[in-house]
Length: 273
Image (cartoon, rainbow, N blue to C red):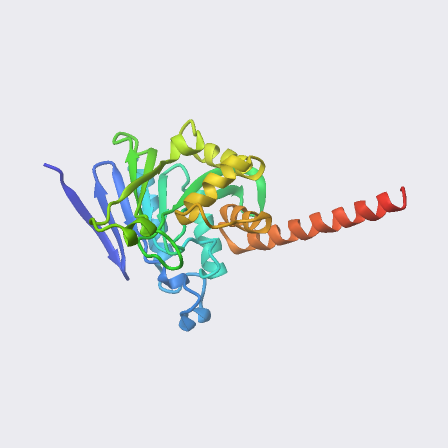
């Protein structure tokens, strides 16, 4: 018989042990920028992050792996910066214990990377956060859901499969709607495994390989008829690397500096410098 032990409940957050795995459901509505009361104290408004640290600390001491399930990705523009940065620091500290981060909210199919130095994407990647697609169609999306395959011994994530509902076919068919297989992460992106190193390398391939970027953009919205040009792709890649708000600014700075360099190069070429 499988025994599940309820460990703690705090302001909408839960922790449950399943053998040597601790499942933490974190209520991060306290980082939502539409909640005006939070602007008084963005750091840890209700103590949930302190509670999260205690749960991770206890899991670390007892040799348990941890999955974190939450809603708004910390790098998303709708999650307040102070909360995002503190969550990022927690992930860095407990990266050996955290086996998976599972978020939603955006309705898009994506992921994001946490680095050793949150302000330097050239440092070693430490953890990957998965943003699952939504069943909601908002806006102009095909509904989708995801199934993860995991190792029941160490709880490493082995693969995931995404299934979607093609609304275009549903409109013209008299049959009941059918969910279709969309892709396997390992097969679609030719990943050796689902480690953070492989996901970080995938970002580079999305940047330079048109076929990989086409697949990523298709899966992002579960449609292949939505155009995503150069600026659109740059923004999506930026968000993958942006697990807290300062990185978004760094992306903008890098793009701005890149444009300045190109203009300077053009001027120098014009005057034969």
